[in-house]
Length: 201
Image (cartoon, rainbow, N blue to C red; front, top):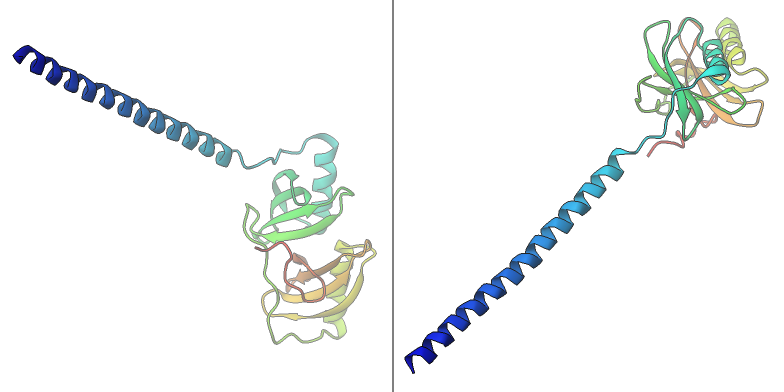
């Protein structure tokens, strides 16, 4: 009778050990799977950029277009850009940093302030006044030099950028072009008639 009870106690203990092993195996499998999922997610997040340095004739044409728009600038790097076909990160003659976007036809299509990945320049504020006389002439001449064939819809003072001109480009695009005190183009916003930049989040 005693041996029967002992066997039952041993059998019950073995059953508990077996249950513990099964539960442990399930838990280990869950932890392992969780770790694998985390590793996969981390990999997919880190591989987020497809930009490639420009080379050869493409590099030459892109940088020539950028330097035509920003004489005296230094090109820090030029590369492909998912949104704008190509882009060049530059330091302007007065030390400002810009990212200049260039289209497939090697024409400048837009500019972001911050040459090393900064956000795009925001829209103009209140208090703008129409330009007149010699100032109007010089501002519009600088803008048309940067955007040949464009139509200047209006030019005015700009609180943030000294002057600005709202234009329709030769291919029908609308831009607001910012011009500094020395009558050089300092930046560009998409939306030539006062709209906010369409690429902002």
